[in-house]
Each structure stands twice: as structure tokens, then as C-alpha cells.
Image (cartoon, rainbow, N blue to C red; front, side, top):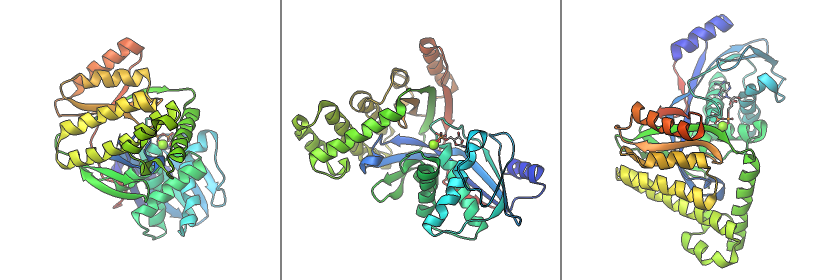
Length: 381
Ligand code: ADP
Ligand code: MG
């Protein structure tokens, strides 16, 4: 990818880039809707990501190009307004530039910018966070600043929350920033604090993206969020992370039935994240897999953010010999399912899953076999 990036940069801008960076996409491994409840979550940075090449300009112009989008977007350094239509992808790096001063960071003025990617966009792999972090690293290199990794992650999240306007939690940027090959990233969302947990040998990720999306997904997220906050209030805690499976069950009669189910999912899911971390450290892939499937069953019956399509994929996958476990990954109400498998799961098995899905739903899911990869980093030019 680096050679292609340099070649395209030269062909587009007529000179070599001065700075190159790369940031990976991510998978939500376990910890569904735990983030805004102050809980914990495990994610995996994958071996696909977004690359950014940059060279400074003296005339204050900013020229933006992506291999995923047509044309060159030219803006002056004063042009930091939100873009719309075909130029709206620039809002991600523009949002990073807008966020940097909030964190006491200087921004580069003029530059030529190229993004290239081998990460599908809008597939629940968080290409948006990868784009933000790769951009942030290039802007920091161009201004000779080296803030902490935590700051880079916060800048990316701030850009997405406040400039792009997507209320994502810390998972996307945190995993892209702190990813490590053959490891998962463990995030305690209350710090937030980041660490890594080793992934046992012979553990593979397969992603099946249904490209389905519930028409009311934004409203459903908001409803789940308020149900969780309502549960915390009744339980007398700030956030559900301060409750436990025992205290939630004890309060069953004081909580509305739906609110009780949401709360039970959250506190039990947080417990599963801890159990999964321990099982990963012990190298027990089968135990990890059982927790993944239990997470899905909880999303299905308690948090009620699964769909028939996602359930069908999980049911199909968990019946296969090389699959340790499977669950919906991401916000739910459509989207993708992940499976943790042994090396015996291959293209033939993936095809069998897609065939079964097509027979039932008349469309094929996108299939991705991902390895873990390292987090966001500058690359030697
Ligand atoms: P996800 O983060 O799950 O991939 P999002 O909707 O959050 O989905 O972000 C996808 C958006 O991010 C794209 O529509 C595009 O605007 C932007 N994006 C991601 N990667 C690139 C890229 N390489 N080039 C241009 N835009 C990108
Ligand atoms: Mg995103």
C-alpha cells in the first residue's frame, strides 16, 4: 500500500509526500452497549486500514484527495466549515483540525493530502475512526508535535462527535489508536483507560456484513440510551457500571420490564467482558467463544438490538465445528455478525454460511476474514 500511496500522491500532486501515517479499522469483540454505561469493552484492531500521505504547501491552500471518492477538494485554510454532498468525507479530517486547538495543539496551514484505504467504509469496521486517526497523525507530524496516544484518540472522537456529528463512544478511536497485533484492546470507558490482552494462537475473525439497517436505528439507539439512564437513576447509581447483576436482579420489581431487561444486559455484559479477558489470558478459545455467543443471546433477548438476519447468521455459525462463538458486532439493529473460529474455518465454510443466508434472505452478506493488526502509527516516508 505504501508504494501505491506514494505513486498516487506523486501522480496527483506532482511531488513526493513528506509524511505518511496509517490507522486500522476495528471489530467490537465483546461489550455491547457497555461504553456509555461506563463499562468495559474489548475490541480488535484489524490488518486493514486507512493510509494518509501529506506534504505542506506555502500558499495556505488545502487540497484533499481520497481513492474512495472522485475529484480534488480545494479549500483555503480559513475554509473550515462543514462540507456537504460529495465533499462530505473531508469533514472527518476537517473535524480533526477543528478539534486540535481544543487539546492545545497547533494545526498545519496549507497542505496536499491523500487518503487511501483497504478498509470497507460503512461496514461497521470503523473506517471513520481510522480516517480520523491517520489524519491526526499526519497533521501532528507536519507540525512536529507528539502528544500522547490518549490525546490522539480523544481528538479523533471529538472530531466525530462534534464536527461530523456522530455520537460514537470511545471504542472506535480507542481500538484504532491502541491496537496491537495478536492482541485485543481492553477499554475501561470511565477513564477512559486502555490496555491490551493477548489473543490466543489459532484464533481467527470472520465478519459477515448483512448491509441491513433498521429504518429507525437512530431513534432506537436513543431509546436504549435513555432506558439505561432510567435504570441507573432508579438503582441510585450514576451509571449502570456501578450496579451489579445482583443489585439489578434485586430491583426487578421497581424497574419497568423493558428497563429491567436493558439493565440486566448491561451489567451481565460487563461481567462477560471481564470473564472473556480472563479466558483470553488463559488461552481458552472455547470459553471465549461461549461468552461471545452468550453476549449475542443477551443482545437478542434482553437488549433487543438484534434482528432476524443477525440471529440467523449466529445460529448458522454456532452450529459449525470450527466456530468457537459468534455475536452481532457494533450497535445492532442490522449490520454485521462476527465469529471467532479456529484455522479450520475457511472460504468453503464462509461460503456455506453465505449460501444459507442467501437462500433465506435473497442477498449475500459481505465476508471478511480479518487478522489483528497494529494501531495507528506514522510510517517512514
Ligand atoms: P464506518 O466507520 O463503520 O466505516 P461511518 O459511516 O462511520 O462507517 O464512516 C464512513 C464514512 O467515513 C464514509 O462515508 C466516508 O465519508 C468516510 N471515510 C472512511 N474512509 C474513507 C476514505 N478512505 N476516504 C474517504 N472517506 C472515507
Ligand atoms: Mg464510523
